[in-house]
Length: 219
Length: 227
Image 1: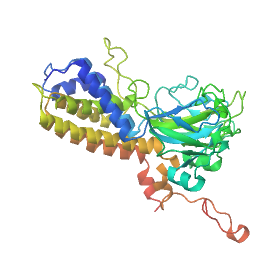
Image 2 (image 1 turned 90 degrees about the vertical axis):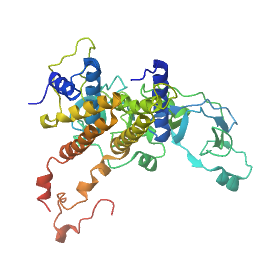
Image 3 (image 1 turned 90 degrees about the horizontal axis):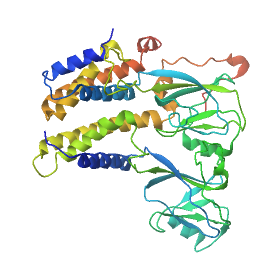
Image 4 (image 1 turned 120 degrees about the vertical axis):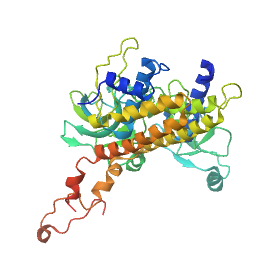
Protein backbone atom coordinates (compact mmCIF):
# COMPACT_ATOMS: atom_id res chain seq x y z
CA UNK A 1 0.00 0.00 0.00
CA UNK A 2 1.47 3.32 -1.01
CA UNK A 3 1.72 6.44 1.02
CA UNK A 4 -0.98 9.06 1.14
CA UNK A 5 -0.31 12.72 0.49
CA UNK A 6 -0.48 13.36 4.24
CA UNK A 7 2.19 10.74 4.91
CA UNK A 8 4.42 12.15 2.20
CA UNK A 9 3.99 15.64 3.62
CA UNK A 10 4.93 14.39 7.09
CA UNK A 11 8.04 12.57 5.84
CA UNK A 12 9.22 15.58 3.89
CA UNK A 13 8.70 17.90 6.83
CA UNK A 14 10.86 15.59 8.95
CA UNK A 15 13.55 15.58 6.23
CA UNK A 16 13.52 19.36 6.31
CA UNK A 17 13.97 19.47 10.07
CA UNK A 18 10.34 20.13 10.93
CA UNK A 19 10.85 23.82 10.40
CA UNK A 20 8.13 26.14 9.31
CA UNK A 21 10.04 27.61 6.41
CA UNK A 22 7.56 26.17 3.93
CA UNK A 23 3.79 26.14 4.03
CA UNK A 24 1.82 22.99 3.28
CA UNK A 25 0.80 24.52 -0.05
CA UNK A 26 4.41 25.10 -1.05
CA UNK A 27 5.36 21.55 -0.19
CA UNK A 28 2.27 20.22 -1.98
CA UNK A 29 3.19 22.24 -5.08
CA UNK A 30 6.61 20.67 -5.07
CA UNK A 31 5.03 17.23 -4.67
CA UNK A 32 2.88 17.96 -7.71
CA UNK A 33 5.99 18.96 -9.68
CA UNK A 34 7.64 15.68 -8.69
CA UNK A 35 4.55 13.69 -9.57
CA UNK A 36 4.29 15.37 -12.98
CA UNK A 37 7.94 14.89 -13.78
CA UNK A 38 7.88 11.22 -12.80
CA UNK A 39 4.96 10.61 -15.17
CA UNK A 40 6.80 12.24 -18.06
CA UNK A 41 10.16 10.58 -17.43
CA UNK A 42 8.96 7.12 -16.42
CA UNK A 43 5.77 6.92 -18.51
CA UNK A 44 4.20 4.71 -15.88
CA UNK A 45 0.63 5.84 -16.53
CA UNK A 46 -0.73 4.00 -19.56
CA UNK A 47 -4.37 4.53 -20.46
CA UNK A 48 -6.79 4.16 -23.32
CA UNK A 49 -9.89 6.00 -24.42
CA UNK A 50 -12.36 5.50 -27.25
CA UNK A 51 -13.14 8.59 -29.31
CA UNK A 52 -15.25 9.37 -32.36
CA UNK A 53 -13.35 9.70 -35.64
CA UNK A 54 -13.55 13.32 -36.74
CA UNK A 55 -14.02 13.71 -40.46
CA UNK A 56 -11.53 15.68 -42.58
CA UNK A 57 -9.05 15.95 -39.74
CA UNK A 58 -5.37 15.17 -40.13
CA UNK A 59 -4.03 17.09 -37.17
CA UNK A 60 -4.97 15.76 -33.77
CA UNK A 61 -4.46 17.95 -30.71
CA UNK A 62 -5.79 15.65 -28.03
CA UNK A 63 -5.60 18.21 -25.25
CA UNK A 64 -6.63 21.39 -27.02
CA UNK A 65 -9.28 20.14 -29.44
CA UNK A 66 -12.60 20.12 -27.53
CA UNK A 67 -13.91 17.33 -29.75
CA UNK A 68 -11.16 15.06 -28.42
CA UNK A 69 -10.52 16.52 -24.95
CA UNK A 70 -8.05 14.03 -23.50
CA UNK A 71 -6.97 16.37 -20.74
CA UNK A 72 -4.29 14.14 -19.20
CA UNK A 73 -2.69 13.27 -22.54
CA UNK A 74 1.09 13.05 -22.56
CA UNK A 75 1.94 11.10 -25.71
CA UNK A 76 0.50 8.57 -28.10
CA UNK A 77 1.34 4.88 -27.88
CA UNK A 78 -0.96 3.42 -30.52
CA UNK A 79 -4.24 4.01 -32.31
CA UNK A 80 -6.73 1.27 -33.04
CA UNK A 81 -9.41 1.82 -35.65
CA UNK A 82 -12.53 0.15 -34.30
CA UNK A 83 -14.26 0.26 -37.67
CA UNK A 84 -11.57 -1.77 -39.45
CA UNK A 85 -10.28 -3.62 -36.38
CA UNK A 86 -6.74 -2.64 -37.26
CA UNK A 87 -4.03 -0.62 -35.64
CA UNK A 88 -2.82 2.36 -37.61
CA UNK A 89 0.73 1.98 -38.87
CA UNK A 90 3.27 3.88 -36.84
CA UNK A 91 6.46 3.10 -38.71
CA UNK A 92 6.51 6.29 -40.74
CA UNK A 93 7.71 9.69 -39.67
CA UNK A 94 5.97 12.91 -40.47
CA UNK A 95 8.46 13.65 -43.27
CA UNK A 96 7.51 10.39 -44.93
CA UNK A 97 3.99 11.66 -45.47
CA UNK A 98 5.32 14.15 -47.99
CA UNK A 99 7.11 11.31 -49.73
CA UNK A 100 3.94 9.28 -49.88
CA UNK A 101 1.95 12.17 -51.25
CA UNK A 102 3.04 15.75 -51.73
CA UNK A 103 -0.54 16.81 -51.01
CA UNK A 104 -1.28 14.27 -48.28
CA UNK A 105 -3.64 16.63 -46.47
CA UNK A 106 -6.01 16.22 -49.41
CA UNK A 107 -5.84 12.46 -49.01
CA UNK A 108 -9.26 11.13 -48.08
CA UNK A 109 -10.05 7.59 -47.00
CA UNK A 110 -9.68 5.14 -44.15
CA UNK A 111 -6.82 6.29 -41.90
CA UNK A 112 -3.72 4.16 -42.30
CA UNK A 113 -0.87 6.00 -40.61
CA UNK A 114 -0.19 8.09 -37.59
CA UNK A 115 3.04 9.92 -36.87
CA UNK A 116 4.33 11.97 -33.97
CA UNK A 117 4.72 15.63 -34.89
CA UNK A 118 5.25 17.66 -31.73
CA UNK A 119 4.09 18.03 -28.15
CA UNK A 120 0.77 19.37 -29.35
CA UNK A 121 0.08 17.45 -32.54
CA UNK A 122 0.09 14.05 -34.12
CA UNK A 123 -0.74 13.61 -37.80
CA UNK A 124 -3.05 10.95 -39.17
CA UNK A 125 -3.40 10.18 -42.86
CA UNK A 126 -5.55 9.78 -44.78
CA UNK A 127 -8.52 11.42 -43.10
CA UNK A 128 -12.09 10.23 -43.23
CA UNK A 129 -14.21 12.15 -45.75
CA UNK A 130 -16.78 14.75 -44.76
CA UNK A 131 -19.88 13.67 -42.92
CA UNK A 132 -18.36 10.47 -41.60
CA UNK A 133 -20.29 9.63 -38.46
CA UNK A 134 -20.52 6.77 -36.02
CA UNK A 135 -16.95 5.52 -36.40
CA UNK A 136 -14.58 5.35 -33.45
CA UNK A 137 -10.97 4.73 -32.62
CA UNK A 138 -9.21 3.76 -29.43
CA UNK A 139 -6.28 5.86 -28.38
CA UNK A 140 -3.65 4.16 -26.21
CA UNK A 141 -1.63 6.87 -24.57
CA UNK A 142 0.79 7.84 -21.86
CA UNK A 143 -1.07 9.94 -19.32
CA UNK A 144 0.01 12.68 -16.96
CA UNK A 145 -0.12 12.23 -13.22
CA UNK A 146 -3.41 13.35 -11.68
CA UNK A 147 -3.72 16.78 -10.11
CA UNK A 148 -3.31 16.58 -6.36
CA UNK A 149 -4.29 20.14 -5.71
CA UNK A 150 -7.69 21.07 -7.01
CA UNK A 151 -8.36 23.68 -4.37
CA UNK A 152 -5.55 25.52 -2.61
CA UNK A 153 -7.59 25.99 0.54
CA UNK A 154 -8.75 22.43 0.78
CA UNK A 155 -6.21 19.79 -0.17
CA UNK A 156 -7.39 16.23 0.17
CA UNK A 157 -4.42 14.75 2.02
CA UNK A 158 -5.92 11.26 2.15
CA UNK A 159 -5.36 10.70 -1.56
CA UNK A 160 -2.62 8.33 -2.70
CA UNK A 161 -0.33 8.17 -5.70
CA UNK A 162 -0.54 6.08 -8.85
CA UNK A 163 3.15 5.25 -8.95
CA UNK A 164 4.31 1.87 -7.66
CA UNK A 165 4.08 1.84 -3.88
CA UNK A 166 7.73 0.90 -3.40
CA UNK A 167 8.70 3.92 -5.52
CA UNK A 168 6.90 6.41 -3.31
CA UNK A 169 10.24 7.61 -2.02
CA UNK A 170 10.94 9.11 -5.43
CA UNK A 171 8.57 11.87 -4.48
CA UNK A 172 10.16 12.29 -1.08
CA UNK A 173 13.66 12.52 -2.59
CA UNK A 174 12.59 14.98 -5.25
CA UNK A 175 10.70 17.30 -2.93
CA UNK A 176 13.33 17.28 -0.21
CA UNK A 177 16.00 18.16 -2.76
CA UNK A 178 13.83 20.76 -4.42
CA UNK A 179 13.00 22.53 -1.19
CA UNK A 180 16.52 22.31 0.23
CA UNK A 181 17.99 24.02 -2.79
CA UNK A 182 15.36 26.73 -2.54
CA UNK A 183 16.53 27.21 1.06
CA UNK A 184 19.99 27.86 -0.40
CA UNK A 185 21.36 24.50 0.72
CA UNK A 186 22.71 23.15 -2.58
CA UNK A 187 25.15 20.65 -1.07
CA UNK A 188 22.45 19.02 1.01
CA UNK A 189 20.12 19.07 -1.98
CA UNK A 190 22.65 17.37 -4.25
CA UNK A 191 22.66 14.22 -2.12
CA UNK A 192 18.88 13.95 -2.41
CA UNK A 193 18.95 14.65 -6.14
CA UNK A 194 21.40 11.82 -6.62
CA UNK A 195 19.08 9.39 -4.86
CA UNK A 196 16.20 10.62 -6.96
CA UNK A 197 18.03 10.32 -10.27
CA UNK A 198 19.29 6.80 -9.48
CA UNK A 199 15.84 5.63 -8.50
CA UNK A 200 14.05 7.15 -11.45
CA UNK A 201 16.32 5.30 -13.85
CA UNK A 202 15.43 2.05 -12.03
CA UNK A 203 11.74 2.80 -12.19
CA UNK A 204 11.85 3.73 -15.86
CA UNK A 205 13.68 0.51 -16.65
CA UNK A 206 11.11 -1.46 -14.75
CA UNK A 207 8.13 0.27 -16.34
CA UNK A 208 9.43 -0.31 -19.86
CA UNK A 209 10.76 -3.82 -19.38
CA UNK A 210 8.16 -5.48 -17.23
CA UNK A 211 8.65 -8.74 -19.09
CA UNK A 212 12.41 -8.52 -19.44
CA UNK A 213 13.04 -11.89 -17.79
CA UNK A 214 10.56 -13.63 -20.04
CA UNK A 215 11.93 -12.02 -23.17
CA UNK A 216 15.50 -12.92 -22.29
CA UNK A 217 14.42 -16.55 -22.14
CA UNK A 218 13.93 -16.43 -25.90
CA UNK A 219 17.64 -15.88 -26.65
CA UNK B 1 16.54 34.24 1.50
CA UNK B 2 16.83 37.21 -0.78
CA UNK B 3 13.62 38.83 -1.78
CA UNK B 4 13.21 39.25 -5.51
CA UNK B 5 10.20 41.15 -6.68
CA UNK B 6 7.50 39.44 -8.72
CA UNK B 7 8.35 41.39 -11.86
CA UNK B 8 11.95 40.16 -11.75
CA UNK B 9 10.89 36.57 -11.16
CA UNK B 10 8.42 36.74 -14.05
CA UNK B 11 11.00 38.34 -16.31
CA UNK B 12 13.51 35.56 -15.72
CA UNK B 13 10.83 32.86 -15.89
CA UNK B 14 9.73 34.12 -19.31
CA UNK B 15 13.30 34.59 -20.41
CA UNK B 16 14.07 30.95 -19.58
CA UNK B 17 11.11 29.78 -21.61
CA UNK B 18 12.18 31.83 -24.62
CA UNK B 19 15.71 30.46 -24.34
CA UNK B 20 14.34 26.94 -24.19
CA UNK B 21 12.38 27.42 -27.40
CA UNK B 22 15.43 28.99 -29.04
CA UNK B 23 17.56 26.01 -28.17
CA UNK B 24 15.15 23.24 -29.15
CA UNK B 25 12.21 23.35 -31.55
CA UNK B 26 9.22 22.07 -29.61
CA UNK B 27 6.59 24.74 -30.25
CA UNK B 28 4.92 24.63 -33.64
CA UNK B 29 2.55 27.02 -35.29
CA UNK B 30 1.22 27.89 -38.70
CA UNK B 31 1.22 31.22 -40.47
CA UNK B 32 -0.68 32.15 -43.58
CA UNK B 33 0.11 35.40 -45.41
CA UNK B 34 -2.31 36.90 -47.89
CA UNK B 35 -0.90 36.39 -51.37
CA UNK B 36 -0.71 39.12 -53.97
CA UNK B 37 -0.65 38.39 -57.68
CA UNK B 38 2.85 38.66 -59.19
CA UNK B 39 4.45 39.22 -55.79
CA UNK B 40 7.06 36.63 -54.89
CA UNK B 41 8.60 37.94 -51.68
CA UNK B 42 6.79 37.78 -48.34
CA UNK B 43 7.93 38.88 -44.91
CA UNK B 44 7.54 36.47 -42.01
CA UNK B 45 6.98 37.37 -38.36
CA UNK B 46 10.20 37.35 -36.36
CA UNK B 47 8.97 34.73 -33.90
CA UNK B 48 9.38 32.13 -36.62
CA UNK B 49 12.44 30.12 -35.76
CA UNK B 50 12.55 27.49 -38.43
CA UNK B 51 10.29 26.62 -41.37
CA UNK B 52 9.15 23.03 -41.23
CA UNK B 53 6.90 22.81 -44.25
CA UNK B 54 5.17 25.14 -46.69
CA UNK B 55 2.09 24.21 -48.67
CA UNK B 56 0.37 26.10 -51.43
CA UNK B 57 -3.22 24.98 -51.86
CA UNK B 58 -2.31 21.88 -49.86
CA UNK B 59 0.66 20.97 -52.09
CA UNK B 60 4.09 20.91 -50.50
CA UNK B 61 6.65 23.40 -51.83
CA UNK B 62 10.33 22.52 -51.99
CA UNK B 63 12.94 24.66 -50.23
CA UNK B 64 15.52 26.21 -52.55
CA UNK B 65 18.72 27.96 -51.44
CA UNK B 66 19.20 31.39 -52.99
CA UNK B 67 22.46 30.33 -54.64
CA UNK B 68 20.78 27.42 -56.44
CA UNK B 69 17.93 29.71 -57.40
CA UNK B 70 20.34 32.18 -58.99
CA UNK B 71 22.32 29.46 -60.73
CA UNK B 72 19.32 27.77 -62.23
CA UNK B 73 16.90 30.58 -62.92
CA UNK B 74 19.19 33.64 -63.22
CA UNK B 75 16.90 36.65 -63.01
CA UNK B 76 13.88 34.89 -64.34
CA UNK B 77 10.53 36.09 -63.17
CA UNK B 78 7.93 33.48 -63.63
CA UNK B 79 4.30 33.62 -62.73
CA UNK B 80 2.34 30.48 -62.08
CA UNK B 81 1.76 27.95 -59.35
CA UNK B 82 4.55 28.20 -56.76
CA UNK B 83 6.68 25.06 -56.60
CA UNK B 84 9.74 26.29 -54.66
CA UNK B 85 10.42 28.78 -51.94
CA UNK B 86 13.75 30.52 -51.54
CA UNK B 87 14.48 30.75 -47.85
CA UNK B 88 17.78 32.56 -47.47
CA UNK B 89 19.81 35.59 -48.53
CA UNK B 90 16.98 37.62 -49.96
CA UNK B 91 16.18 39.75 -46.92
CA UNK B 92 15.56 39.49 -43.20
CA UNK B 93 12.74 37.10 -42.41
CA UNK B 94 11.78 36.91 -46.06
CA UNK B 95 10.93 34.05 -48.33
CA UNK B 96 10.40 34.11 -52.05
CA UNK B 97 7.83 31.96 -53.76
CA UNK B 98 8.86 30.75 -57.18
CA UNK B 99 7.08 30.96 -59.54
CA UNK B 100 5.18 33.96 -58.16
CA UNK B 101 1.52 33.32 -57.47
CA UNK B 102 -0.63 34.35 -60.41
CA UNK B 103 -3.62 35.56 -58.40
CA UNK B 104 -4.48 37.13 -55.08
CA UNK B 105 -5.37 34.72 -52.28
CA UNK B 106 -6.57 35.65 -48.82
CA UNK B 107 -4.78 34.47 -45.70
CA UNK B 108 -6.03 31.13 -44.49
CA UNK B 109 -7.99 30.57 -41.32
CA UNK B 110 -8.36 27.35 -39.31
CA UNK B 111 -4.84 26.46 -40.39
CA UNK B 112 -4.82 23.00 -38.76
CA UNK B 113 -8.27 22.32 -40.23
CA UNK B 114 -9.75 21.57 -36.82
CA UNK B 115 -13.03 23.20 -37.83
CA UNK B 116 -13.09 21.25 -41.09
CA UNK B 117 -13.09 24.40 -43.22
CA UNK B 118 -10.48 22.99 -45.64
CA UNK B 119 -9.02 26.44 -46.11
CA UNK B 120 -5.57 24.85 -46.55
CA UNK B 121 -6.79 23.97 -50.05
CA UNK B 122 -6.91 27.61 -51.09
CA UNK B 123 -4.06 29.37 -49.31
CA UNK B 124 -0.39 29.36 -48.48
CA UNK B 125 0.48 27.81 -45.12
CA UNK B 126 3.86 28.09 -43.50
CA UNK B 127 4.33 25.54 -40.75
CA UNK B 128 7.16 26.48 -38.47
CA UNK B 129 8.87 26.08 -35.16
CA UNK B 130 8.44 29.23 -33.17
CA UNK B 131 9.74 31.09 -30.18
CA UNK B 132 7.63 31.00 -27.03
CA UNK B 133 5.30 33.92 -26.38
CA UNK B 134 4.95 32.87 -22.70
CA UNK B 135 1.16 32.89 -23.07
CA UNK B 136 -0.20 30.54 -25.71
CA UNK B 137 2.95 28.79 -26.86
CA UNK B 138 4.54 27.53 -23.68
CA UNK B 139 6.46 24.64 -22.21
CA UNK B 140 4.18 21.67 -21.38
CA UNK B 141 2.70 22.29 -17.92
CA UNK B 142 4.03 19.03 -16.50
CA UNK B 143 7.60 20.29 -17.01
CA UNK B 144 7.19 24.02 -16.96
CA UNK B 145 7.45 25.10 -13.33
CA UNK B 146 10.24 22.81 -12.22
CA UNK B 147 12.29 23.46 -15.35
CA UNK B 148 12.01 27.23 -15.53
CA UNK B 149 12.54 27.56 -11.81
CA UNK B 150 16.17 26.55 -12.39
CA UNK B 151 16.79 29.37 -14.86
CA UNK B 152 14.92 31.87 -12.71
CA UNK B 153 17.02 31.00 -9.65
CA UNK B 154 20.22 31.04 -11.69
CA UNK B 155 19.51 34.56 -12.86
CA UNK B 156 18.16 35.89 -9.55
CA UNK B 157 21.19 34.81 -7.56
CA UNK B 158 23.42 36.49 -10.13
CA UNK B 159 21.88 39.94 -9.70
CA UNK B 160 24.15 42.54 -8.13
CA UNK B 161 23.08 43.46 -4.62
CA UNK B 162 22.18 41.95 -1.28
CA UNK B 163 20.81 38.69 -2.65
CA UNK B 164 23.78 37.87 -4.85
CA UNK B 165 25.19 34.37 -4.42
CA UNK B 166 27.37 33.34 -7.32
CA UNK B 167 27.97 29.81 -6.02
CA UNK B 168 24.27 29.23 -5.88
CA UNK B 169 23.86 30.76 -9.32
CA UNK B 170 26.44 28.28 -10.65
CA UNK B 171 24.63 25.44 -8.88
CA UNK B 172 21.33 26.34 -10.52
CA UNK B 173 23.10 26.67 -13.85
CA UNK B 174 24.10 23.02 -13.52
CA UNK B 175 20.57 22.04 -12.54
CA UNK B 176 19.21 23.95 -15.51
CA UNK B 177 21.40 21.92 -17.84
CA UNK B 178 20.30 18.63 -16.24
CA UNK B 179 16.60 19.46 -16.38
CA UNK B 180 16.89 20.74 -19.94
CA UNK B 181 18.50 17.50 -21.05
CA UNK B 182 15.73 15.50 -19.38
CA UNK B 183 13.14 17.60 -21.17
CA UNK B 184 14.81 17.40 -24.57
CA UNK B 185 15.30 13.62 -24.25
CA UNK B 186 11.64 13.29 -23.39
CA UNK B 187 10.66 15.30 -26.48
CA UNK B 188 12.90 13.19 -28.70
CA UNK B 189 11.50 9.93 -27.40
CA UNK B 190 7.82 10.69 -27.15
CA UNK B 191 7.17 13.46 -29.64
CA UNK B 192 9.92 13.03 -32.20
CA UNK B 193 10.48 9.41 -33.08
CA UNK B 194 7.94 7.22 -34.75
CA UNK B 195 6.86 4.40 -32.43
CA UNK B 196 8.56 1.86 -34.61
CA UNK B 197 11.89 3.47 -33.78
CA UNK B 198 11.08 3.65 -30.11
CA UNK B 199 10.69 -0.12 -29.87
CA UNK B 200 13.31 -0.99 -32.44
CA UNK B 201 15.75 -2.37 -29.90
CA UNK B 202 13.28 -5.11 -29.09
CA UNK B 203 12.11 -6.03 -32.55
CA UNK B 204 15.63 -6.03 -33.96
CA UNK B 205 17.01 -8.32 -31.27
CA UNK B 206 17.11 -12.07 -31.02
CA UNK B 207 14.42 -12.42 -28.45
CA UNK B 208 11.64 -10.86 -30.48
CA UNK B 209 9.37 -13.63 -31.73
CA UNK B 210 9.86 -14.28 -35.42
CA UNK B 211 7.09 -13.75 -37.96
CA UNK B 212 5.34 -16.92 -39.06
CA UNK B 213 6.85 -18.31 -42.26
CA UNK B 214 4.97 -20.35 -44.78
CA UNK B 215 6.57 -23.59 -46.03
CA UNK B 216 9.49 -22.52 -48.19
CA UNK B 217 9.07 -25.38 -50.63
CA UNK B 218 5.63 -24.14 -51.59
CA UNK B 219 5.77 -20.42 -51.17
CA UNK B 220 9.34 -19.26 -51.67
CA UNK B 221 11.36 -17.55 -48.96
CA UNK B 222 10.31 -15.03 -46.35
CA UNK B 223 11.78 -11.58 -46.57
CA UNK B 224 11.78 -8.80 -44.03
CA UNK B 225 9.70 -5.77 -44.68
CA UNK B 226 11.44 -3.37 -47.01
CA UNK B 227 13.66 -5.93 -48.70
